[in-house]
Image (cartoon, rainbow over all chains, first blue to last red; front, side):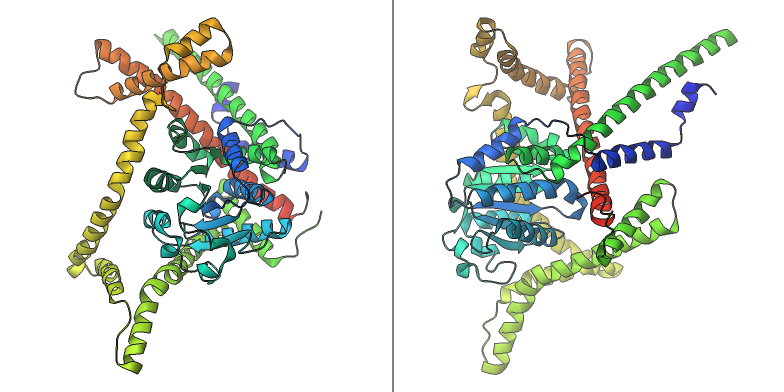
Length: 280
Length: 236
């Protein structure tokens, strides 16, 4: 067995170990590699910057723990940005695994920034039926959410007193690892003309670029890289930026593996052809 | 190094290691963690659905209504809640093969209602707006001689991208659609266009795969951040 054969049939557990090291080492010893921002993320940032203080922003936490490492950092960055800009945040949840995460994230960010529940932010909680809920918010928030997550009637929440429907909301940001942002586009944007932005997992990001082209989404935060860009824009480094060193190193490692794998495959194919020719 | 003293962090860390142990080979620790995850997820989802949907939308209106009926002799509850409640129960008839066909009524109602809600929104958002967006952006055509003229008068990277991206996108859409047009044999001109369509598809798949790798690595980063920071306390 020559070196190329050995490489092609390497025990994949060696690759797992290398990938684990490529992630762990930069986390412990950060390299501080530069992160550049991209227009889709800048557009979300600029849209929030353009809102007058006091204009509510609806952030829909439409994800569960499976995608939390990617979507959690961007939710935190968006919440920090809105609260710092004095934009009241209405948090909804449209997936059953999301309420716990929404409670955890909102309370942590609120505590850190001195934000007051029901004044600076409110957590409406989870409701079943994505399309029905999004449509009902266009008429009146109280149809789907007569009470918030903590069982307080909406009319008793200071933040919600002047919020009836999408007309009173400056921007909707749906953060999800599913197609739920498409529902926000179809029902909140197309039906009610609500400005919608999306924060999605990297797997989903490519699927959402067409909505940027058409203007159906004002901006897009894609994956951990998007979260890192947003953290850079608001100048609050957190898990997103901390993860970028590891992300870059692993990507380089994978590129090297792909190149080596292809080189080995080409050499093996040539060697096989030569041996077949000599056998004839 | 400051090891966590939180019992829940320890449970989460050990379960994470159990799951990752599968990378070495299948083993009882992985099986245990996998079954625990499935069981806990199912139980958690049931509780969430019950308290967020069945309890406030079905059981409370009926409980309150029948409570008043017993004490005051008049019914003030929402009987309409019985309709979705009954349809939901009909779904469970699938568990009894002999009367499983009854569940089709509930499925029929659900599919019909859902299609009625989504069709108009989907047509506008995902077909009409996308077709329009293929040729127009911000009210201007993406295939613009003005933009091309800008590039020739001011040759630079920015104007080049603006001038080329629109025609490239139109070409990509037409070529890719041609690849999926099966009523004509892919030979001659149609075959050539379809082959270009394959190139666009491959670029699209490549971008998606790159993003997928990034997503999976992000999840690993998240888990290792948890293990190294929250559990082992090696980083702040």
